[in-house]
Length: 220
View (cartoon, rainbow, N blue to C red):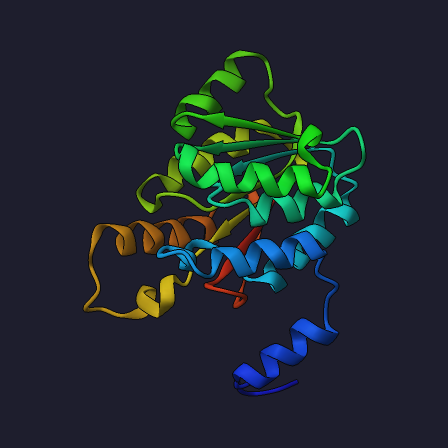
């Protein structure tokens, strides 16, 4: 067992991208396109997409919730892992960014699996519960406004089946979670949620240092 963290150099990451995963051509095209946008930091890294895709395959997941779609890389990666009759509910508030996502979904022939809901995610999730969707989803990915993470987490717990998985992005928040000088609302929200999930006996959590930090929480 290594006693230290492996230095993740640009060269090593390039090797990982070339040898450690198979990125769909449309995913790579979308990643390159998004990298030119001013908010490109909001896109997940390809190794994270590959990991979530494998989790979905391992679980034989068929119903997914995504909170925060941006230009569609994560939703495309997950939809590609779904079976033909799989369903992904994509929640976002931006028609501008998701218009890029829609083109990528269509190009990759997965648009029939994705239902995009342009509305506040809390409203969409509440409606799903009221429609009787409690406990029917297999997998959830949360990557949106940080101050609402806790509420998204609670809704997803209700919507997921036992054995379902919630994944949460940005849980290391570029290292700010351990910086005592960082006490802005986003950092506090992430820090408090990390503390909460660590002690939440409704789930089995695993935080991994991929991308900006990803928590995988299995619902008991």
